[in-house]
Length: 120
Length: 174
Image (cartoon, rainbow over all chains, first blue to last red; front, side):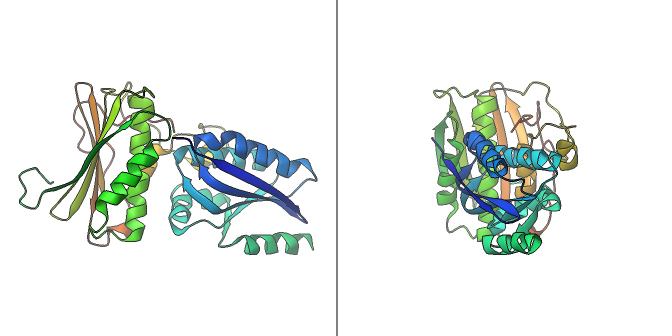
């Protein structure tokens, strides 16, 4: 059963946004890696936003991919925030403690406001 | 503990999926359809779906080693207020069975643990009980979700091998 994940990257003042859609599972590895690299390629964003509003499914392999992105960002001195998680996946971020390291925003607008305030 | 002799026992579904990557989502969709109307809240249904998907993924990848022709058997039953999902692969007892290291996000971020290894951890936190048994080549994970009550707000009340027979939980690497 083929799954799909897409990543749309937007560069904003103060940070970069990776808008994810589809399924975050083992097939998403290249998409997530390339999305992150595009996000940090132009400028030196202090914060990377992962937007999950259009993500339908995240499995344990997807969690591992998010952990890898977070580890890479932290090693480069960047923070990661997330937006648009459903209640269920917010709970999974809490259980795995991802929410201890990734600030969660209900919506992308809220996350972007934080970026622009920080850049302002 | 439910049993086949319970007067309220009902089989809600019995099916197989081919052992191909991604087919865990077929399993979760069919289980979700089978338990519709059984009284699970939306929140607990999402939890059960995640647990089923993770158990099915382990069965496909680590039990049946992605051999499409080797089936993963799924049965859904209801009895005495419990919804029970059993997921069986043909991989026998996992090598090196036993409790693995609990995933620790700080250790993973520090490079002291691999990023993966969340599958069993998620299952344990999603359902009210789970156990694992092995009979010959048949390795079965049994997930229990109470259809009523407020267990959704508390943590798991059992370990992966709490009622395990020979062998233990498959040490997933997902």
